[in-house]
Length: 602
Image (cartoon, rainbow, N blue to C red; front, side, top):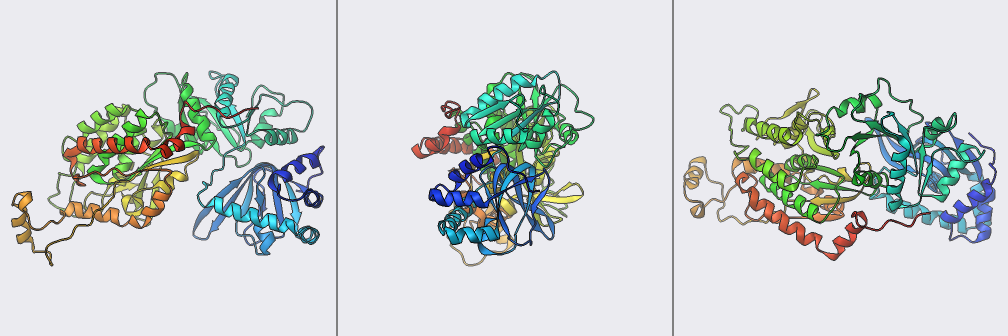
């Protein structure tokens, strides 16, 4: 694993040390440089394992590493990804405690190692080194509290799959879009006779993004691109069939499918076959000839994407339609949608990239009949049959998509949060039948029948996570989260001490509403409210995860007031316009708006 010192290695490492330890006096930085030695880590190779002694620290010079926390009863949990300039293992070096995570090279990586004995000698000569490292550790721990596990890639490998889509022009256009977010190096072939690893390391040091085009270069260039890409972009023509065998995977770099559709093409279809054939980790749909789609890809690659989260809330969820209209008026580009319960339904409709006006018309037609009005005469599983809701969903999906779409067929990525009843856990649905996913997310326990997915029972997601901003924060590419919460409960004092019996309640319900004595929720509203209340302990954290928070008042609109679509939409529209007009919100959104000036480029 140890690597001979490269040509100009000291100069490159000295520059990186100055960036990371700039507060140190120059003599202390020189001492640090003299105590480091080079390490080359192949793609997929482990750097350290949880439980091992903390006997060294590493400085990432080039490459990408992934830290996972082992879980005894399930898959490991991703903690973070680390690229150029990151310190790895410094906490163990300072505390002498064992490693707490597994660290693996996502792709070929070059590191500088500082062993414990050399660290101790260095601290004895220059105590400022220990102080500087402690400050770096504290700074990293603070920044990681809200940081997503998907760090922005510095080096991207672009690989074309079809001759019908020339890669070089696409790469030029993507590089131009990325320049909005920093300095970009577009490499169609190696330059000079240097080892590609060191050449790429120098490009990474001089740029914010390096785009390696893996075709058209000399022999071995395509493999070098794949070996050194933090992420592999697979450019595919949606008019073609998926390949029979996927391209060879080198290392553990995630695969991003860029599926290009002709301009004016109908709704995507058959995306699942592409994902399975290419073993892709994530996918983004594009339409040829649309610069705004390349801008969206650049935002997501730079981890500056905009995600919108819609909370559940029954008929109050129609307020989401007004917020969508206000975002559209303000020119806010939305790159991903997600939600729970009614919010999941609205999020998936929005992800079809249909105009707000048409969405309102589709929703109005789909919900013209009370979707919770088909009561079951034999309520063994639920009070409501759920057939009306199923028909409403099917009608809306067919009108917007033209077929029985899958979640992955939506123009924008979308997720639905549901509850896996069989395993008693929160479930985030990204793939599979769109209608069934939405039905699972909206299946209120006791009110609507649960949904069977892959042999397990699923029900309403509001019980676990009614406002899943934390889930959006974890989506690849998302850097700005807009949240729309609908639950602003006002306490109401009752004028009686005991809940009356059924006959007294029935007599009271037969009176005009204004004359009723017992202001109690209906059984359906009671079940729905309880589902939402059970996740309210996460509401403060969900609000904190929102960079911009919308809370439409939805005055006078009950959870089952399906006939009040227009009133809810108007309240959502008025509230969102007011929020978007605030100076602090405009300042927060400005970098993501299409009219914002690009960053300075080299």
